[in-house]
Image (cartoon, rainbow, N blue to C red; front, side):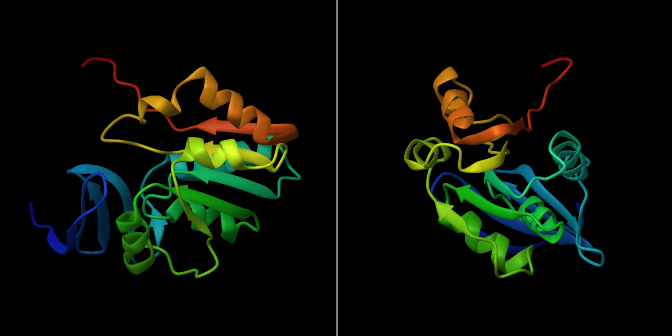
Length: 175
């Protein structure tokens, strides 16, 4: 309640909606929360975002090139780029990319490939990235084809020696 709809459209895979209350802006895909950002500070309100950055730098201090599968609101890509990393994102829905660029991110140097993450990994050269972050969701869970052994084999192939793979997964105690 109390949210104002700033934008709504039918994306390729879901209804894409941006809502705001006060300084809190949200990206919803089919009503499922995907991005939450405080507009004054432009910080993500999801605790996993700074945690992923801390994990990446802890696991690989000399990290440089990151592949982010799932762009969403672009806030994770932007915070990683702000930390000095080169971030290549992959997003399957063009409406999500447009919304991210119009309502969430301020940088114009965040490359986003419009493609499925698995097909992107199939055609990328081996050992292309220092890290691969999987942050793709279809509703409240990652798309099933991004949870397969084949997919994680492609992730491994795309990593340089000593590279890091991280997946944002949500777990429920019940339900």
